[in-house]
Amino acid sequence: MNPAAGDPPAIETSSLTRRFGDFVAVDGIDLTVGRGELFSLLGPNGAGKTTTIKMLCCLLQPTGGTARIMGHDVVEDPLAVKKIIAISPQETAIAEHLNARENLLLMAGVHGIGKQEATERSEELLELMALGGRAKERVKKYSGGMMRRLSIAMALVSNPDVLFLDEPTIGLDPQSRRGMWDHIAGLKGKTTTVLTTHYLEEADALADRIAVVDEGKVIAEGTPNELKADIAGGQAMVVEATNVSPEAVEALRRMYPSVKEIDGGLEIEAEDVDVYELQDVLRPMGVAIQSTYKRQVTLDDVFLQLTGKQLRE
Amino acid sequence: MTLATRNLKEVWRDPLSLGLTVGLPVVMLLVLQALKGVDEFFAPTSLTPGIALFGFVMLMFSAAMTLSKDRESALFSRLLTAPLRSNDFAAAYSLPYLLVAIVQAVVLYLIGGLFGLGIAGNWALVFLILFVMAILYVALGMIMGVLFSIKQIPFVYTAVLLLTIFGGAWMNLEAIGGAFLTFGNVFPFAHALDATRAVMIEGAGFSAITTDLNWIVGYTVVIAALAVYTFKRKMVE
Image (cartoon, rainbow over all chains, first blue to last red):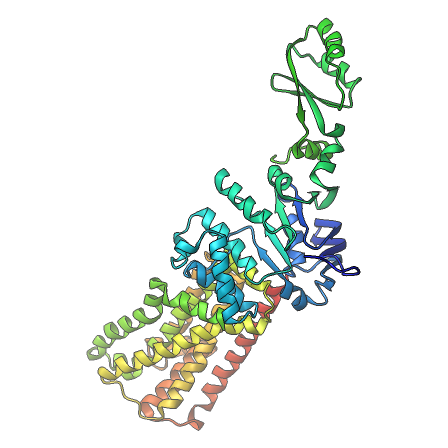
């Protein structure tokens, strides 16, 4: 996908808001997603990710702000938006009495795609998603992983400009999840994809850019590396030690901005930690250092620092 | 059209749905007509219209369950992101059931014919009344499917079933009279049964059943409009 100069971005929201009575589910979100980008909305359950997606897909009316898909307003011109988008919802959302091929033809049909094109596209997707061998079988007999793959294929069959994948790997075993990641990664550059997930490693592995969402607000935005680099240059020092006292932790906090107790020791988020200096401080306080090692900061650390809570709480 | 075809397959490929909508009314007709020796009301000519409405109630249930299941599985949400209008959705979820209703009524009347069913008046008028009632029941199914969960639907279905039965599906409402008759006549079911039996037994023409038809058509127009409206509301919450 090569956007021409002056083309509107794939997605542009301005102060996008959705209230349910007194509860603000989405609170003034500003987002811009470029064409062909794989953009992830990362946040815990209830953060407002699905509500945001529903507004972008014209399923839910915003109570404030605006949202445009390829320049089309989701409230003013929903039919134009619906012609260029597709969604794979959090639930598998397939017709269980149909087989895989019929499900694909159903979605192609409701998008107004001609029979021949729909058939060709369906066959391509059945092969791509490794469903060709069981395409004639009713999908209620499929495994969870197969249903998920079919769900994404159903979203792709209309060749959408913008694809929304709402928690596409929820409930999958690690092997199926990795397989799904390959399929999603293959969309990069071809289809603008918005991926909502609460799996940090998923956003890290797949997304070009991430918006971290919490309590209806975007609290950070950037590439995975940018977000991690914001914390101590992306480095953390793990100190395995015994007899760690609150006084020792307090002493280190006066030296480094982020120090936390972990099982079996301490973790210091800082770019340059001098091990000898650590020993000089901790030994007199009775702390016995057994080993130290550096590790890369993860998006989990980013989320913890931004919100003060773990994503899977 | 694609969505309508899929919805037809939902009935056709679900043995329970097929059994309830087509099989059960036939069984009811065969069982109840055996009582014609006890009471003439159970002779096929007066019984079949009631059984036909009973079949439509089953169809309403099936339509409501399909739609509610689609909502709960999020297939409906997925479909709502396709460039279709509310009228397209209402048509796609109702036309297949109307087709099944026609098949259902024809099968019932053919079987009734084997057991002595006769139509003194115009058979086309009988099928016109039944067709309008089929629209009414399917529209009710649409509304139920949009508004209620799979767990709630059986309760609403039971209410409609009881109204149909107490509308005179297999009892002579005129003979019971009193509050039953007054209550029954508030709803379109009693009027549909009165009109159909008048055509079949007495050979009544169009002008003789105008009042009943007004009730039936009036209810159908309102319920069908409500069904389209609920679809429209559901499309953007």
